[in-house]
Length: 233
Image 1 (cartoon, rainbow, N blue to C red):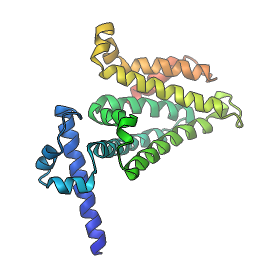
Image 2: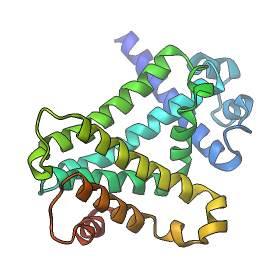
Image 3: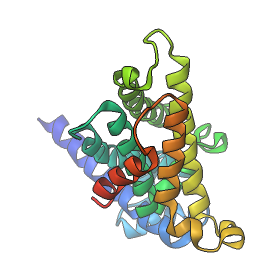
Image 4: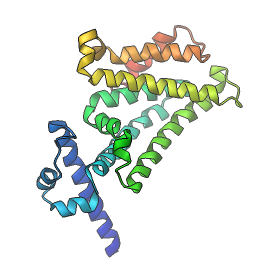
């Protein structure tokens, strides 16, 4: 019981640290974040802080894992959709982008955490937690595609098409969100991309799904209808 209480106390303190780090990063950015400032706002010593996170890089991986957990909660909406597996797949992609747009500070943590200069300096346990989480989310998307094989006309023994489709849609959504957050984009597109990111993803996803064999009437409108129903949740 004593050991359990200690673990719970440690977990709560870690959540407090990550919450404080998220707020600081949203104000000053990751590279300007100082561990001493974080310890101060969390009302703990710097030594206690390093007892939880061995470095700033370790802290960032922790933030990315927390962000991934918050993101994964949204995918229950897709799982509970009363339609086909392919529709669930599309909804999950739309929810993924909406989460990133709504929580840019969390997306930034996840984005930075993918850089080798970050995860190579983190502890093995933190990095493994990050990999396990990404694998779980990727597996969910792959499961939707596997369950939708017939709808796409993909033979069950052909995994490359499902894998390529999953990578393509992930790259599309991820790329759109990076562009949404970039001020450089505004110089070329004004506010068009920022204001229409969901619709751009809808049309891109529809085109990808059609190319993969999805046969529905007016695919673009179908995807946009799913977006109207779910991404505002």
